[in-house]
Structure formats: structure tokens, C-alpha cells
Image 1 (cartoon, rainbow, N blue to C red):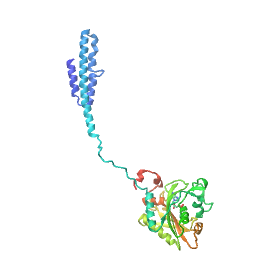
Image 2 (image 1 turned 180 degrees about the horizontal axis):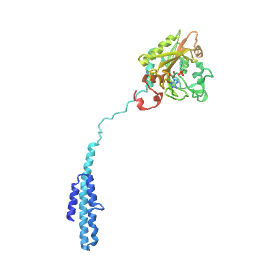
Image 3 (image 1 turned 60 degrees about the vertical axis):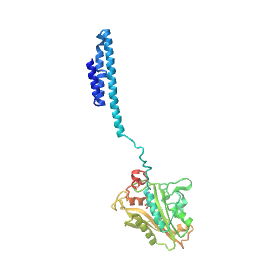
Image 4 (image 1 turned 180 degrees about the vertical axis):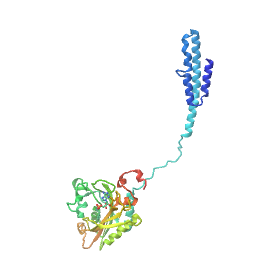
Length: 335
Ligand code: FA5
């Protein structure tokens, strides 16, 4: 028994790792261990021998357990020391502070265009997003039966109100408020009840522009449109001017830009046409001037309605309009 005890003690003390120690514990102290085996044939012994053997086994058990516990503590302390060495926190490192955000690309370009037009003597006006039928349609010479007034195109609210479908109502508000001569732009959010795809949103941005003076010509209009596009794209971009119909301008034009996503070969953004509608414009229809109390015999002017969201898509080659309102930080952090 003494030999067994000595060799068990020696094995506990020489265990090289916590795992090895555990294996020794099972072998010596476990249910099928050596001590258990020694207790087995106790029944065959005389009462005196049994008492002596029992005492011996208990002493041996205590000695082995004490040796086991102290070896276990050594391994545990070593493991804790290793953790403390590798896992630590330096509470004196200064905090990185709030992560700076950035302006949305639409805001960035809007501010660039505002600066440009301010430098050309234009005022920057704002108008309500909830409009009346009068400002959104009637004052702009849009007839009662025009399809734009349809439920399919316009979000109607109660009491003849609607979510403005374009920024053109600010033309009317500008004329009423400031009168001629007038140079104004009005950037803002507009809403249309239409199905969304790579180039159409239900909520998007336009930037309206209007100039009223004496003897304003199509030449003036084209000059300002060219100045605008050169400032934004900082290089020559291919444009085309074609006739366009809007009841509030006469003559009216569609100024399209060659698609900068595909370079004009055709893609979902330009609906495979190679061109993107960007800048409808024209000379102000005399009816519109008259409706706002301006004498078309003395004054005339031009107006345009830039598709600001589409312009931003062209400027940064964004291939789907839905990115812009996605709120996806992976997208936004690029600007
Ligand atoms: C208008 O909204 C006129 N008010 C523009 C105007 C103003 C003409 C002044 C003449 C004088 P239009 O519906 O074409 O026109 O829209 C103008 C531009 O907004 C389009 O060229 C296009 O770039 C952009 N746009 C139109 N619908 C959407 C849409 N669903 N999603 C994103 N951009 C759009």
C-alpha cells in the first residue's frame, strides 16, 4: 500500500499539464481508481485489520487529494497568469471620439450648384413639399385633364392638397414674392406615384431654375445650362437638345446627357438608349407670367427643372437610383 501511495503521489507531482493531472486523478482517485480497488476486499478482513486498512486508505486518500489540489492550483495560476499577459486593457488610451459622418452626395452637389448660381446673381428659394393643386398645376398652365394630375402619377392628400410632383410650383411662389426681374433656383424633394426601377424613384430631388428679365432668349438659356453642366462634370459631356412639351414653357426642350454609366452603349439606367433625361427647360409660357401678375409684353424668361438625383448618379457613375435612399453605410461612406 505504501508503495502504491508513493508511486501515485509521485505521478501527481510529476504531471506536466492540467490534462495529464486530470488523467492521473481519474486513475488514482476515480471510481475505478487504485484506492477504490484497495477498499474492495475489506469484507474479507478481520474487524481489527479492517479498521487499520480503513484508516490507512483514508490517510492515503487525504494525502493524494491534497497533492492533487495543490498541483491543480499551480496549473490554474499559470493559466491565469498567461491570460493576464495576453488579455489586457489600457484604460489610459484616449477615446477615438465620435466617427465623423459626411454629407449625402445629393446635398454635396446641391450645395455646389447653389454656390455656382449665387455667383451668377441667383437667389436660392425654398418651397413647401405639401402643395395645393393651384401651385403644382393650375398656375403652371397644366390643364385640368392633364395625365400628371392622375392618381397614378400624384400622391393626393386631403382637401385638394398633394405632395408636389416637381419643384416648378416654387417658380410661381418666387414670381409672386419677388416679381421681375428675377433670378432664382429652388432645390428640393419631390414625389411621384410611380413604380421604382434603376432610374426612377417615388421620392427624388429636382432643382428648379428661373430667370425673368427683358429680352431673355434661348441663347441665354443654353449658356446657363452649359455653365451648369461644365461646373458639375468639370469636363466636356455630350448633350443633346430636343423639343419637349411642358405646358409652362414655350418653346420647350429636353436636354439629355449621354449616359455616363455605360458611355452611351446602353444600360438599365438609360433604358438601353445611351441618353439620360436630365434637364428639361424652355422659355416661360406667357400664360404662366400673366397668372402671377407679370406683364408678358414687358418681361420674358427661361425656366429649367434639373433632375438632381439623376445628375448625382451621372457624376458618380451610380448604377441604381435606389442606392441613394438606401441608408446603406457601405454606400454612403464612399462620399
Ligand atoms: C418636370 O418635372 C418639369 N417640372 C421640369 C421643367 C421645369 C420643365 C421647368 C421646363 C421648365 P420631368 O417630369 O421631365 O419635368 O422631370 C424633370 C427631371 O426629373 C427628369 O428629366 C429626370 O431627370 C428627373 N426625374 C423625373 N422622374 C424621376 C424619377 N421618378 N426618379 C428620378 N428622377 C426623375
